[in-house]
Image (cartoon, rainbow over all chains, first blue to last red; front, side):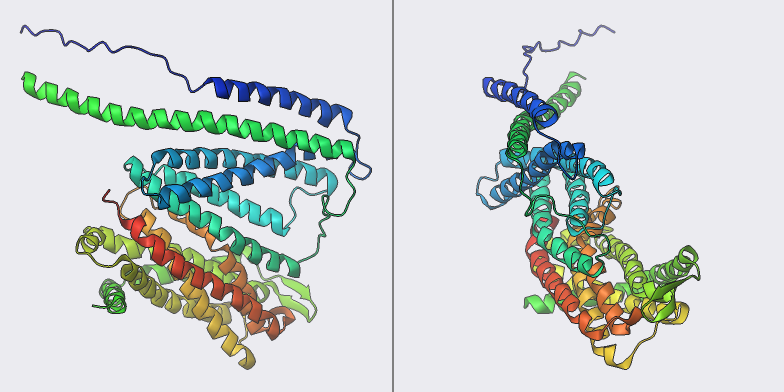
Length: 256
Length: 238
């Protein structure tokens, strides 16, 4: 029973992060802008006449809505590019997936901050307002999209399947919103006041909102870059892992 | 062979499988029936006040419950529709044989729509018998049109998303998550249209027609979108 010890090929161990100079700069800018947002949102900007201190939730709520829609938009765009370009580049698929993941998280944040604001201002967590209801349905659809991404198969299968589902979700948004708005117009019991419509917004409040949108957009870009690179690594790991497993099984077969 | 002829062949094949196996007749329709009964348990025999005086709550919500039961049954019908394809790799065989995916989509949608239509009629009958819903003569046209259009829309959505979950264990649970948010417009539109067709709670007949418009847009959107997306979705070969 003399067997030679299996020689494991010593591969160069190289730690590779997902950060680059660009993402570091974006990350630092995000932190600085978040600091500004805290200073303006909680400190400098005045309390609202009607909503009082609750208006400060808006400085987080509005940017999260923005990032949620931005993320879905990028997801749809990248899905379309993947599907209709000749290369079928997986890079766009990963951008779409990463963007959808971020959008889903921010949709959840939007719902939470919106409900907290609603409880303080309207007295209820949830009103069957058209915007709220269609947003909730969109949130569920986004979770469905992420589930489709996890179905398995090759990377190209995953990419094509999720690109189609992603585009379908975005295309159904107008239908869902239209139907919910029609539905809601018959059930107009709780009148929902529109805060950002005709009301004059104080200059400092508007500036704080602006800071919030910039800060959260930077955060989105930072997350998107890191997440899509992490996904690229996971894909690479899948490929390399499969190759290595095949090579090992072959080696076992020949050594007997 | 034209696309339409293939679609008809596939639809008749699905219906023949059902006629011989009777899975829908023996399992899905009883399920729909028991759903209608347990809705009544949940809502009790209370009354609600409307413009026309006190109306039993069940009669008031009957149109919505009919469509809710139809949606739940749709999920089962879709699973069945694709179980018969994936059991023997029949869907792959069709693709390998070069059958036009648009024709497959239409064929399976038609078969699903026929089965769903039968189910709808039974559910409406249950609503009339159990919940005391009344059909009025002037609302018949709107009622029939709503059932046809909504059923076609549901069948297209079901076939489209059913293809995603076909043939792989563990995917069945994904179907409701994908389908239910998408068909929310059908639930809303069909419920309101049937309410005005039946005159539930004093709703005017004229209020139903815009909802039928919504359902038509939905059905066309998914008949076209589904036909385009179905081929790439079932093509798992790459």
